[in-house]
Length: 131
Image (cartoon, rainbow, N blue to C red; front, top):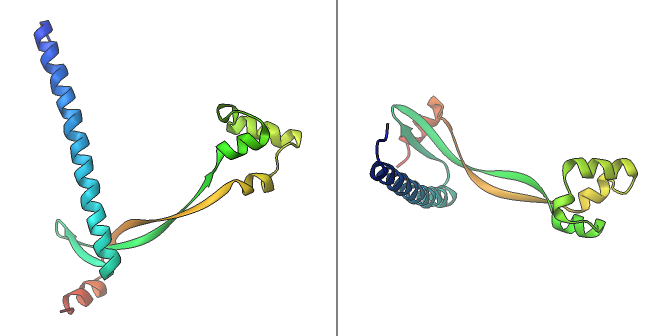
């Protein structure tokens, strides 16, 4: 329990410092992850250990579909804020929007991600035999 304004001020400053530290840690984590991903892309899968468990790190593609709401809203003569899922459903019911028209504004984006899974015994032996 806080008993004075100075204690509240001290706690508030601690919170601000923790937020800054968390942001810095996230930046460091992202940089290190990028370095690992670059290495795995260049050299192939890597066997690492998490505690006493063997983990295999691989790069796998991640496919995402994105809808360009800005372009779709402009083609319909609406604001982007008005273009919600419910509004789109109403437009489909009214016949003003079709799935083919929505598909015109969809883009497929492929990004790489770091995948980790438990290594099999055969894979562990294979990595041990490498020189």
